[in-house]
Length: 176
Image (cartoon, rainbow, N blue to C red):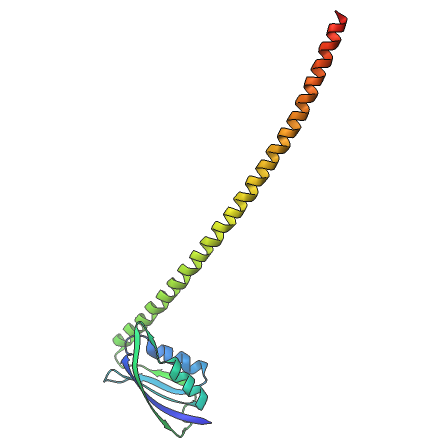
């Protein structure tokens, strides 16, 4: 069943890239409408879509992660008007403030990327260290095997030389 939700979100919700997250959640849940900052520090959302999608949307945007802290969400459900074809972000007229908000969001994404990259590098380092340990054990084993093979071959040849030398000495002694 389709519904329209008029939503007012309270808390630390402006100048934190929150509208972008709301836009992404609405896109993923196939909701139409808009999101905008209000002068009183709240964020206002009007959205239309399936009842289940709106419920999931409200759960997803109830964020308590830096730099966003949603303290309260007021929702009023109405009949849908189907006036929206997409979901959009209505930005302030003040382009400087909008630019700074976009920069804040970019900084957030960069922090996430840095954290993810650090975790991947740590994991790669551990795997590389394990692989090096494995290879060290293999190489050490091969060196020991080669040394044993060389020792065996050397001992055989040395025995042969000693036997040949003994025969030569015996033949020389027989000639005298």
